[in-house]
Length: 202
Image (cartoon, rainbow, N blue to C red; front, side, top):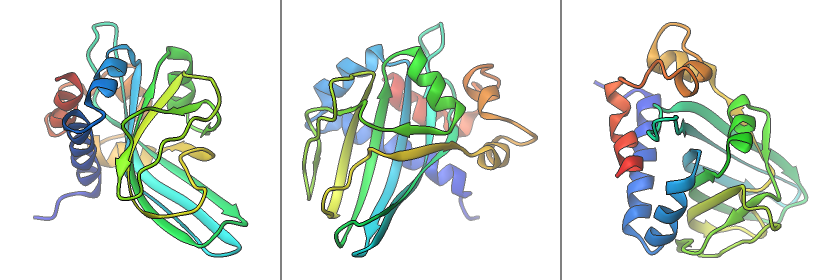
């Protein structure tokens, strides 16, 4: 039986977190994760461009930390941006984004949120095209990435984060919303997403 696309995203997100815990960024990631209020994982973000038109996009999930310190089940989001005037290139990346306070987490959860100059790359970025970026002095958002391919001048910055209520409803059933999952914590007992929560809690 085919694996539903939402489950593929959740499983890939769990693998991305596990890879960080085993890689060169392990120490930095685990120190920051302890204080993070929420985590966005985009296991496959594709960035591509021709001479005059480009863009990036990928599906991911957010898990929010509750008052008990445990992470919620995942809610689904997408990151999309269309740009002009880029150089030729292609890159596939996985991103783990840490929201370090409740204010920025709430903005991200609401959707319509742009990851901009407040996103700060952290030591330990790795990949076949390894690089590290520092965008501004704001450390409310920290991110780690693994990148494959070559692409001139592109990064996580500028992507618009949107709620995917269609995926939330498909994955959990009924009319389950991101708020139901992340704030009301109505899906904390969901077994199919347990591996991701365990990867974050380890």
